[in-house]
Figure 1: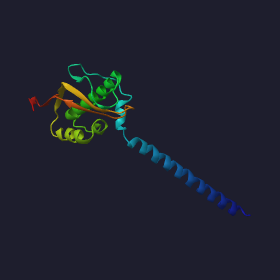
Figure 2: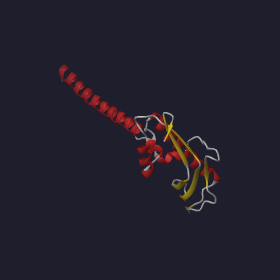
Figure 3: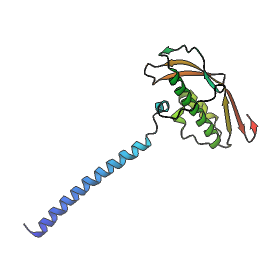
Length: 164
């Protein structure tokens, strides 16, 4: 076996090993990119956020809560109210900054369509909301699904000092 054959054999092994290493590297990079582009799980807004409760006159639960499903504890009601309040703050932030990036984290369905349609991308606005009265419609046994209605809330929009 000659020197050139050994060199060629090392070359073939080196190229094969480099190809495998490059392929593994590309797959790992692709998984890394996909992980960060998935976005937040919409249900995660009910877990792990800071508990920010509005004042009692800004938002409250109707009592007693008659609903289908389980009855949420006071702590669960506070967690739901806090997540809902964060959603309203995201809406107010979107009206002011015209940035809709985190809308899908907090809003879905008809509420999402209505919230997006209200954002005027040409004029920044301020949004104020008060007097939220929440009526629980459904709360699942494991606490992962909740449905409620917001009745009689007050919404004020202002563009350049003019109330809408």
